Length: 314
Image (spheres, rainbow, N blue to C red):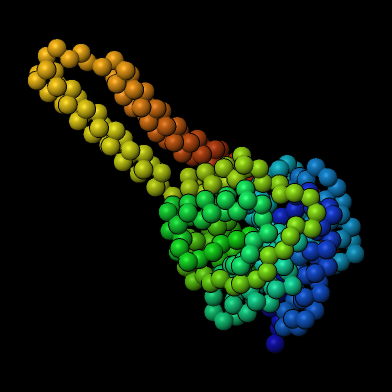
């Protein structure tokens, strides 16, 4: 019986000091899982350090490694998509480049897939992230539940395994602004959680700044949900209703007490509030239109500068 192939896809950024250890850990754990063969796809997201040189060296000494070098920094999810296009396996496994997601526990994710799940996400009992990252994760979880319909009891993370058909469905998405979690949620709801350990970061600091996290969240709900437009519509109706009721109140007050002056401050406050809401709604609509324009112009998800490793000789 032919062994199933597991394809590990790892986006890399400022990970020259850690990616070698991650690959070594994958090699060790897969030796304990003889029912599987495997490949490792490392995607360098135009890291400013010598990450790709480390990847090149690893690919020269390990025939299972494919290195992908992007021409500029496209972000984690675009880097994942670039890796997905190189996958040849039956099962996809994604994890981080900093060692915080334990490759040694990949057997738990694979077991969940073998038991019938389409996707298995790692759940961490204790996350070893900063307060900022943990807060960002909570905000992202609330956004996913409201905007994309994620079940409240489902924990999503960067460490997960998925069946081949889920990967193929994600690869059908060819537009700019990919959001892997959204692609998974629209492909299947047969998703389970598997509890694993979460480690301290081995070296360096997270590459996610507040601006990058904000852009990621905004990308998620504008690329895969129309609910922001519905919220804008409801907000517009509420503002119009409040303005109408305030106008009726002002007229009645003037009729009952003719000497009471119409409040200039209240009027200006109402104008500023309504004007701000209108600008917010127009900006939101503009964001959708702008993204449609970029997609119509065939903006790439990623641009590959170079591929090293196994594919060079195939």
